[in-house]
View (cartoon, rainbow, N blue to C red):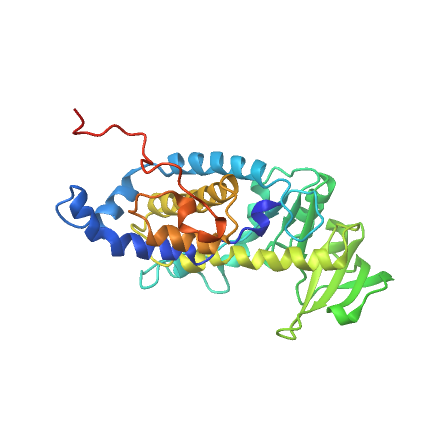
Length: 317
């Protein structure tokens, strides 16, 4: 549940900017000149991305255990996985790529990611309409997993049952439906749940489809809304040091590792600050030698010793 809620926010971009801005300080640490982008790009091109992926996976396992009982405003015990994707053209502005075939878009291929999943019984998979394939969704259903997705505009279905809703909350309907399309009703022969929701801020209406019949309609909407936050991850990683597949995967996994590591630190130190604030402070104090708690006066931290390092003095007698 924790990582459906933890957003990959603009903090990652802030860290990148800060690392470049503070490069001049490296001179005083023994570097004769600032680290250049080409140097970082070369390193990312050559070093195996799987090292960083394994490290990030270990950190994710630790963070999930720490946040397992965290209250995120949703009474939910299920593990939640969010599926999202981006296209290379968004990540590498200005770079020339092979022109795709007409009538072909990256989103048409997103659905094949479901074939790579090993469905976890009881888990909830949240995805956008690009992943709607009723045969594959029915496979998740048969495996005991749940999904929440957004209906396509050409959905053909009829209402079987309607539950009462409070329209003042934005929930316009909560229904059980049966598919009517010739192929879709063969691919997904059981009932689905359809929730229509209108966001007050934008007055935009969304139709959600799910096989989860027990959660409240408000929870279904909230889970899908949190999926949007994950998209910020790619939005804020705009410039890459190296553009090969290995370099891109390296930097994505490093970014994930950094973000998750900060969530672990926040939890273990009981810091009562948002992740965004914590990342901002870290970016500004990157080369400072001080206890992290000291950077947050509200935590009422006092240092018990002036010597905060357990490293021996190089020049001690």
